[in-house]
Amino acid sequence: MRFQRALQIPLFLFFLVVLWLAAYPLPSWFEVDLFLRLDPLISLGAMATARAYIPRVTWVLLILGVSLILGRLFCGYICPLGATIDFVDWLRRKRKGRTSENSFEVSGRYRNLKYLFLAGIAGTSLLGISSGFLFSPLSLITRFYSFVIYPMVIMISNLFLETFSPVFPVIHLEDLTFIRFSVPRFNTNLFVAGLVLTIFLLGVIRPRFWCRNLCPSGAIFALFSLRPLFTRRVSEKCNECGKCLRVCPMGAIGKDIATTAHTECTTCLQCQEVCPEKAISFEIMKKAAFPVPEIDLSRRKLLSAGVAGMATAALTMTNLKHLHGGESPRALRSSQLIRPPGALPEPAFQARCVRCGECMKGCLTNTLQPVWFEAGLSGIWSPKITARLAGCEQNCNLCGLVCPTGAIRLLSMEEKLYAKIGTAQIEKSRCIAWEQDRQCLICDEICPYNAITSQLADGHHVTVPVVDENRCNGCGYCESKCPVAGDSAIMVEPLGELRLASGSYQEKARELGLVFQAKTSLEEHSILDVQRGDKNGSTRTPRGESKGKKTSLPPGFIVE
Image (cartoon, rainbow, N blue to C red; front, side, top):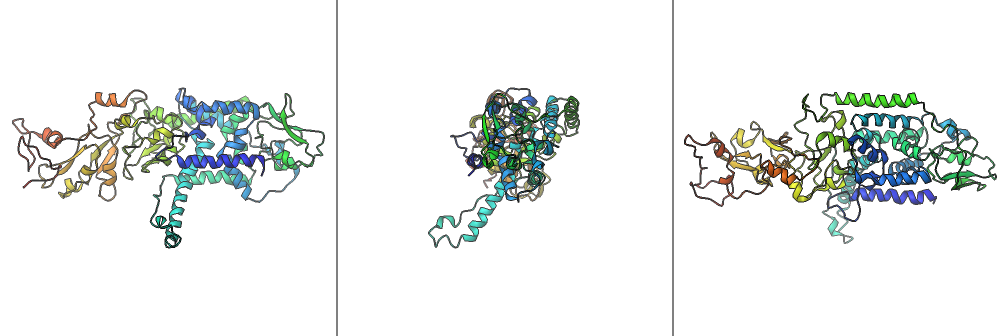
């Protein structure tokens, strides 16, 4: 096995294992978002857009330091998107052609695009708009395996278990007979699949077309690899057979065989391995031959790309649904856009969020879903809670643990209790109890904070649900379990959400009078009666209870 594959394959498998482990309960022996933090477009881009230093992503400085010595080693050995592209290219038949077709001079027509994309991304960052997630290789491939491959693997596993369930008792594997896995489902998965498959298909034009020409993270590594310490050397033994030139996956070798474009070389050693004369070696060299120029870009083109990025950011910021931090004009926020607990205030959240999908893949209940255009163009692929699908598990803080840039704060379980993400609102025209006068206690019974009580109301023969806004933290269990077909009769809206960039949620919640704890008696939580009151200022006692007398029965039960 080639040296590159001997390292690339285990690292790629390790990436898949780590991505699989990004689930509840999260392992404590490894930080599952480490791969994401090694992408300079994610790390440097998030800090530039957020105008903040993020200690969590400083691992990238180590990788950039290695690039100064060994060149684009990350692209050739560590990047999981590069490994996947290599695998797809390997599945296709090898292309045959003239010796010079893969030379740096001939195949470099589109190489400057990656630098222009990088300049455009820098332009959007200047105005505080994050766009790196559209081109980040780690963000792209994590979304692909999380939203597309992972659910398919789970579904195929269930199909396998169902198919062979009659056989398991025969081979003494009875425990597998009734095992089935919950299949996660994700919004925008078809678009993600189409985008990544397009990247794979570009390999028909040239091997690693994305890495050569389009990847802005590759552009950053190329700039740091302009003159690496460890370089390719061709000795006098070379007979110019051209084998090295033909097999180079990055087209980094010049027409004369001896020169090397270090900005493109990933130190894969493939040229050294195929050389019949053993004329190629990689050594520490102060001076090395290289094609001129390696980066052929005028200042005008770079400035134009940067201005185009700024114009795109301005266009995004003037979109009607763009969520900003100003008071005027008022942003038209969707009533169903519920951010996960611990999410930073919206402008800072969007600036830091790299849309990697790690939080959504690991979400215990699958309630976190990628946004399409609900938060404007700048909010695409950012996470939101889909309460109708499932509620937010109150004993899980995984989304903050796996977020590589701190867009979702890492909260303790006690702090998360007070991280109010919204408030449940009852649509009385759809509610079984309010509209049809039929008994229904589901939302009352399912609420973990006792924020919903079933009480008697004028004109109703059965108790109806009432929400205490100061007790509701917006977890969404009531919405997910509502038996009404279609849209729920009780829906969580962003009203009253609590989002802090720093400080204690617990202290802020207490300051606002929020109480997230179980009630002790019905009288203590009688919202309708407190609000209504009689003419003498007294409150109405629910049927089945005497004034001054407490009962141990739960709300909704009537004593005849």
